[in-house]
Amino acid sequence: METRDLDYLLAVEEYGGIGKAAEALGMSQPALSKAIQRVEAQTGLALFQRTANGVAPTQAGSLFLARARRIALEYEDALKEMHALRSGEQGVLSLGYSPTVPPALVLGACRQLLKERPAARLRLRRRLARDLVDLLVAGELDLIVAPEPQPDADGLSFVELFRDSLSVLADESHPLHLKRNLRLADLADQEWLLPGPTIPLRQQVDAAFAKLGLDVPKLRVETDFGSTSLLHLLRGTAMLCVAGTESFDSLEGLRALNLDIHELDLRRHIGVVVRRDAYLSPLAQRAMALLQEWTN
Image: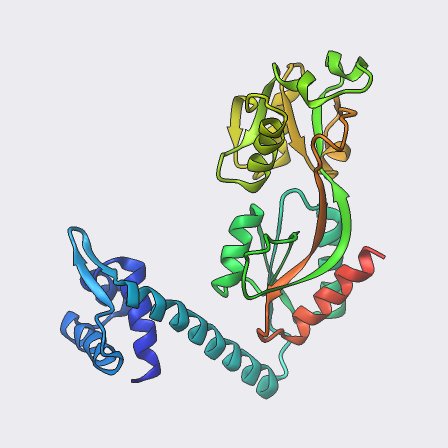
């Protein structure tokens, strides 16, 4: 097997067909088919099966491709490390951060990094935490600043920066601000602005309501929380939402409800997430150190 055969297999999986993958790779379909057959001959198992829309991995193929992705990332890391040793260049840092992480933290550390390393370049990505983890695992990001990943997120290392808590946010004129001993049941009839049902935060809110035997929140607006500007929709309305600490500085006219934390616990651990055992360039290591300095 040649190392580029792994790239060929991953391309076939990505494009869902030999023809499309061959076109993207700039090679002929027979040559790509031969590469797949070469690997299948060594494994002794079929790695792809034909479908109505092209090809898809078999069960054995899915297992093999998962390992192939890891091998490809390790190989890419090795090349990056050798390039850094050979050239001594500052290189490029690809960093992602969650919308609910205070941007002053990330951008302040980046500003300091650019001052220290004039030749360095940055690629910044602001995405939902789940999307950031996917990009990190795919090798498209060097590190991310986000809430601690779920326990089942394998192959990742987490370095805590600080702890905070999200809050239930409402317009400052909302009558619930006047209620003492506010409980989750008091919010049962309210309309909400929340992320989609597959997002962990939404699942956490729904689970808190269900635990108390309450109906899940009434959704008025569904959003991906890609920008705090969406919270402007709350102003002058009776809607509620869940937001991070940075929202209070950027939005006037909104305040956090004094909700019992034991009924809806939104405390979080925020930190730097990297792929375990992945190569971290000196630039990435310095970025981590600056992030830690900015939180001390």
